[in-house]
Amino acid sequence: MGRESISAERARTGVTVHNTRDGVGLRLPPDLFDAHFAEIHRYIARRLPEDVADDLAAEVFVAALQGHYDPAVGAVRPWLYGIATNLVARHRRAEIRRWKAISRTAERDGGGHEDEVLDRVTAARFTGPLAGALAGLKRRDRDVVLLVALGGLSHAEVGEALGIPAGTVGSRLSRARRQLRQALGDVNPLKEDSHG
Amino acid sequence: MDELDLLARALPDARPPSPEVVARARARLTGPPVRPVRRRAWTWAAATAVVVTAAIVTLVFSLVAYLTPAPVAVAPRANQALFDLADRIERLPEESGVYWRQVSIPGNYQKADGLTYLASTRLETWQSRDPADPMLMVFWSEPIARPATAADERAWRAAGSPRRIKLLCEDGERCPSVSVTDKLGKCIYRQDAAAGGVLPDRTVGTLTMADLAAFPTDQDGLREKLRAYHKAWYKRGFKEPFEKFLPVTANLLDLPLRPDQRAALIRLLAGVPSTKVVGTVTDPLGRPALSVDFGVARHALVYDSKKGKELQVYSRTLLDPGTGKTLADVSYAARTAVWADKGDPMTFTATAPESGWTTARPTPPEGCEKRR
Image (tube, rainbow over all chains, first blue to last red; front, side, top):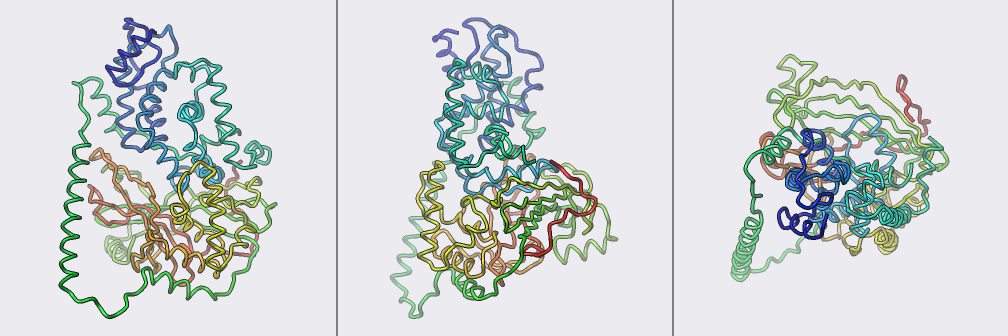
């Protein structure tokens, strides 16, 4: 995709849509919305307030329709996550406020089911430090971390989503992980599995 | 588990989009382009209204102050009720025990057939003074319900004491039925050997029982101790002053502090500008409580999909007037919605009376299923 087409896309939709080829208007998968809306909404709603997520998740698919997905360039899922991440970037301050608020109050949410609740009680020990560390990360590092952690994308898929080389993904991830580990103090979360 | 797995587990999850949100998004794809609501105009209008109102109020108060002689009596200290509470509890005997048992009752206020019910689950954690002991967690996931007030209970009995009720969901749809009972259903448990004596609530800092026991009881010492935790907080990425951190320390009132330490913390919090005593209320479990707004921005929002909006709620901490311990955190509707009036209690997390120090060994209830 050429630089011109990125600019044109940004002008049209207000968001950079990677993974499209200039002038090529290939068809979107017919079940794109049904297959991916819920997970894209969830990804955004874990980063921003729910009402904002409702609007942005819809915007992702509007931008996708206008962005002319090209299967030859990469898979559709990372492409959607990339659009979502670029849209989330518009709300950077709201996102940082959210991580700070979570870190302060470390939500004592009693909802959820069975194992989830026990998992959350176990993991809640780390919620505050991790959310605080996220607030302090550079945006580009935070995007990489959250695409992997919340979106479940591989390094290659994160590269596709953000339009950056896999090596850059690796270095950003490595830097961010180091900061997350620092936020956890001397706690090694790997110990948890061995003790059960 | 690595940092990224931990991140995925530890960060709050989001609920699935409601059918209305999905339908609205789908309509944006198939219908004519929809312009987002121009909220900025509202913001400016609201800001202008606030400024104008403030100016008028200031003017009126200035005039009234000019015309009215100053009162002779000395006004009571702000948050006097908290200072009084601290004085009452300071000399209570210290509790003894080997295990700290925390029984949390998270729930919602729900409406059905014109009555209000409390629908809740139950979560217990048992933590030893010995950091080598595993932490026991027990969770009863099946919600049970009971009438919310004495008046609701009378109406429930008059209706023939139905054992199962269908609650109204937040979006106006009917939810699955819930038993009206005190009897808990099935439970699961986990023994967390990796807890390392660290208390689950890390909002103030990484605290063990020994750390808590070392909290000073004089105001200067306590403030300095909290400054040390603020420094760690600052290193986590918060670039906010100590004054913004202080209201968060109200979370310590949930933890196993001694009465003199609890009194010291309550005094310190009473002097924080964001702290406001709301008054005496009844908590979700029917106990008298002192309702306090500690000024912590709790971002709980309840979704109102009928209107396609979230319902803003505000939180209050309800303290035991006899011990200063947290009885419950309750959220209230900040405006009237389809299924709630402004000021209605919406959600809560109550601490059950059986919580506290105990010498009984933590044993999973019979029939409870073990989970890794």
